[in-house]
Length: 281
Picture 1 (cartoon, rainbow, N blue to C red):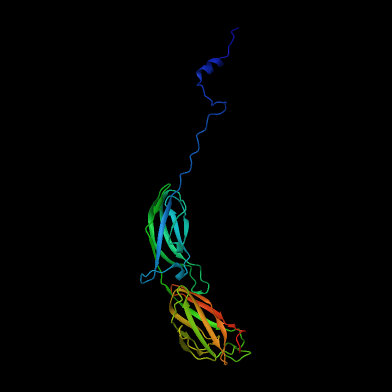
Picture 2: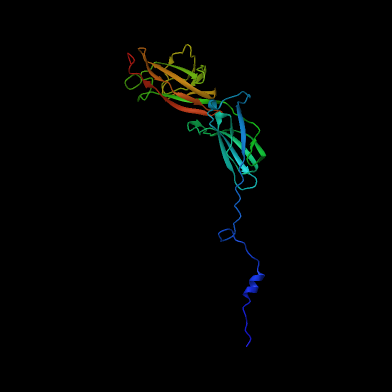
């Protein structure tokens, strides 16, 4: 009988040899590619009013610049927020690519403004911005134009059941009222003429602010609306003094008012405080 011998040795001779790394095991794997470093963009901005005069972020209550960024190669987009008062900034790193960008100037929504608004202005879009790996791409400077005037609508409130002008104790007993308004940034006076609407017991009239020699006008009651428009947007402090028949300055208020831009109207009720330390009050 013929003997069939294994051909394993021949088969092995016909196979290619596979070299193993030192110590045996599987061949070394290809290293994983490192992610491509991102790129940044830089931007500077300025704010002007409708007459192209420079204005500040604080003046109009602006807090941030928001850039809406869209990479043309992907769905959706991202945002980058800069602090308004810094006037310039560098973005975080983004994936290299070609981007379209939109820009807006933002403020906190003013709940006491009519109507409420959080976006103050936009700047022209910048399209086809090339962001390269490891580089910072400068954008064209941004200019935000804002209507930097607003309006104010106020009421004075003593908290007395019969109002500000009725005799004490049910009323505040105020006989005359004086008002001054100063800009917080430079302490300059705002010589505005206020319109005072008629109330149940007091007639309509106007009041012109004079910070050097404040005018003592008849009492302004709590149901009288005090309004003025076309006020330069800024932060102000109002000083109200209510005198009684003695006469003594027994009632006062020193509130801060941020007059909004865009023609919006700030609506506030200002509480008059009773000065217990004043003789005769």
